[in-house]
Structure formats: structure tokens, C-alpha cells
Amino acid sequence: AAPAEVVALHTKLIQASQALHTNVVALRQIDADFVGGLIASKNIDDLGPVFNDIADQVVALETKYNLE
Image 1 (spheres, rainbow, N blue to C red):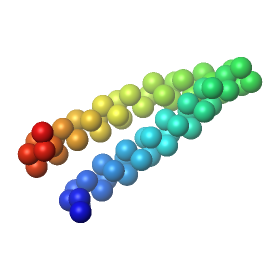
Image 2 (image 1 turned 30 degrees about the vertical axis):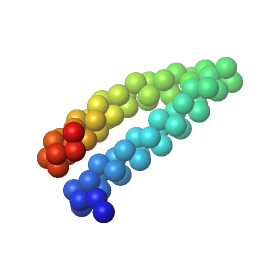
Image 3 (image 1 turned 120 degrees about the horizontal axis):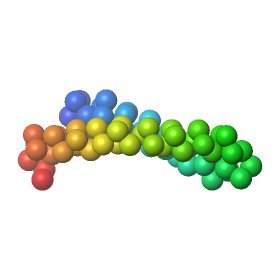
């Protein structure tokens, strides 16, 4: 069982992963929808800080629970 404190982090990771997948699919269709592909590209770029924050939170939890 995972500590209750990771529920929000897990939810954030799932949502960010789903958003990444959705935008990758849209980006792959750039030949058919150029504007949609550009928007998807921007959305993917915007997810960078979200994944960086998730990584920072994971490191903090690893440190807290001596999982390094």
C-alpha cells in the first residue's frame, strides 16, 4: 500500500501522461491539421514543467522514505 500523500501525485502523473498522449496523437496528425499540430506542440512544451514538478516530488518522497 502507498502512503495517502501520494494520491495527488499519482493523479497528477496520470493526468499529465494522458495529456501527453493526447497531444502526441494530435501532433502526429500535423499533416492533416497543421494548426492542431501546432497547438499540440505547444501543449507538449507546457507539460515539461508539470513532469519536472512530478519528478521533484518523487525525489522528495524517495528521500523521505529512504528509497534511494
